[in-house]
Image (cartoon, rainbow, N blue to C red):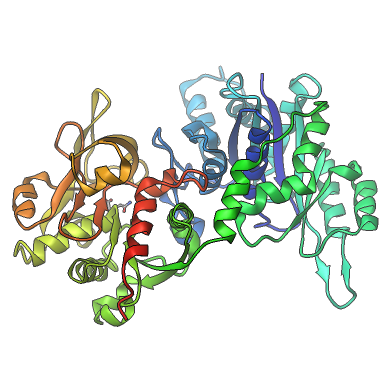
Length: 547
Ligand code: GLN
């Protein structure tokens, strides 16, 4: 049976609860334990799949095909444990399950209520895979006091009560505001937040306090006294230069020790932090820089491409260089020549995306990278647009485009070199769908195998010819154009095992130009950089600056 750490937040949002949870997961692993991290989100969307990246940042996809919150990305990057569909749940999902059961008559005519029906549904979710790991870390989204969060707080209270004593602890994250005028750290918001938590029956065992300044001993003692927490369980969370400092920083502040103490685990196994020391060394002792342009649509919001940004950084760490990422709005190139914007970058990345807006600019960016021999990594839509570029400018198919944009505009304008996928093979069965299915859940999602061509650049980067990567898209490059495009130099170097779905394209005569239909960024970790990103950054490092 797993031990449970429930992680809640108070005072304000965006305190880094996800990061604290992920760092704690990494620290428990460093002490030899197995962990799994989970996110319970109070919003009413059934999953984040249909939420705009502007609203919610990137959608993180799991191997088993769930569209989840980007916090699961943090969890994976810090622990290396592949997240699963059952590691993320929202109020929307919970209510939808409860209502489905009610319609089926599972509740035998009972009146359905938040307590116990909704809370029971949440508790069942928390329990999944209980026997597989030593520690289950469950983060509750939002802040204590939010109306939507209440059923979750009630559910974790009950859950801890149902388990044997000492099986569950509560960790609460708060903010200690710094009042510059009086030179003081204020503890009152933290006191109030804990009071709010206690009023719903939850007593924190560990308090993590974000603060710009170190917490003086007097303040720490005061927080401990007023919040009914042991003094050494009041953990300071100072601002960090890199998120990957978090495991070491939290260890220095005593977080893992406080958690193990709260469970009464003594003596605590000694931690081995070599992995994180190496990660920090690679970040802070980089030798040189590379500048990479991400040409995309959601450039205003860095969180929209969170995993890509992280994977590029990991690629830099693999090469001991610092990667400077600059976001370039693809729409600019619809009117203007990309050269002045893109010259001087060591590499160009065109990420995934949906909808036509900005795509002509992405095509221009791909053309620029191809012609100027600048390393190019096209991810999902970025691969599709590289194929369209080749079809138009190398194969002479001037009307080449993606069926996605015809569906959007309701007009037939493009020769569909990228077409809507209606049927594909998953494992040993076929999945089929129609154009007008619901928006949610109509994509090829999750891990699929690709076979790589022997001798290709991509096989060299991976060091193998069979890979498994995560997908999230509706449209595919049409294999019927393969011969025509290969004759122009664009090689289909990765295919689905049945040979029907192009997974990777590359130009063998270009220093580094690879497009992938999947999202390699989702599997990259700071201590295990993704081979494609490592190789992409290596190529960028080798490029001579153009201006
Ligand atoms: N919009 C494209 C598709 O659905 C690409 C999706 C993506 O980049 N993730 O196929």
